[in-house]
Length: 89
Image 1 (cartoon, helix red, strand yellow):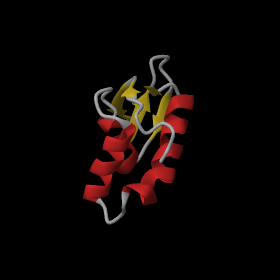
Image 2 (image 1 turned 30 degrees about the vertical axis):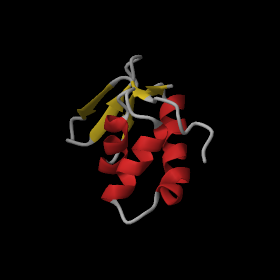
Image 3 (image 1 turned 90 degrees about the vertical axis):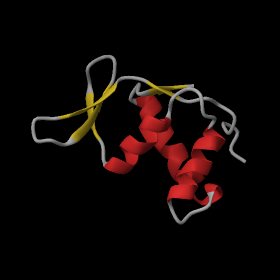
Image 4 (image 1 turned 180 degrees about the horizontal axis):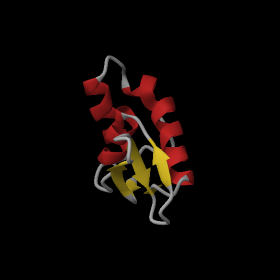
């Protein structure tokens, strides 16, 4: 089990579209980051109410993977979002 399994990640910033219609996440400092639908779906789940484990469980119900199979990918995504100041926990 991931040590952050009981953390409550909460998104920061906002989801928008750039001038070409591509999805971007914009942190509170105004810096924009291009994202795809999968990453934006994960970011939108980070409501500060669901634990990391609950997020993994929800994602695994929507994809053909178990929580333990998607854990490394989601953990990496959260670390990148944290570095971009788009999530706190």
